[in-house]
Every structure is written in structure tokens, then in C-alpha cells.
Amino acid sequence: MATADITVLPIGREGASVGDLLAEIARHLEGQDKVLFELHAMGTSLEGDAADIFALAAEIHALPFESGIPRVYTVLKVDQRTDKEQTLESKVQSVRDHLQSS
Image (cartoon, rainbow, N blue to C red):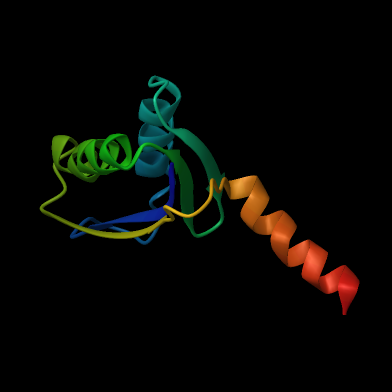
């Protein structure tokens, strides 16, 4: 199991808003069932098999091109441990536990 964070930035379109393209990415994410995802203000958190995350990242990186965007900049951060199972929720809970014990 791996966790990841992805941000897709379309470049070369008129205006500053990208909400319509991000909605298209969200629809694509909702249409698949291999990778758990959580949208947040600056990107999307992903959880699943590393190979599935990388495949999904390639798919959503390509989506803005289908809308005529000439350039796409995607940032993908992946965290994978082999010593224990981690989820998005368990990583946040670990920080909460440390805050409570301080």
C-alpha cells in the first residue's frame, strides 16, 4: 500500500481559474475504484497499490491535454513503507496522537 499527493496544473489557458478542469479530474477519479482519493484545497491525496497510483497519475495528467491545454505540470509525491501498513487516515492519526502526548 502506498499513499500519494498529486497536483495537476494546466498551463497556457486564458484566465487564472482551473476549477472546470479540476472537476473533470474529480469525475475521472470518481469513475475508478482502484485508488482511494481525497480532494483537498491544493491537490488530491491518493491511497492504494503503487502501480495503480502511478497509472492513475498518468491518466489524470493527460486529461487537460484532451481539453486543448498545451502544457500540463504535474507534481506527484509518493510515500510507501514496507515495514508496516499505512493509510492516509493512519498517517494523520499518528500526528494527532503525537499532539495529544506532548
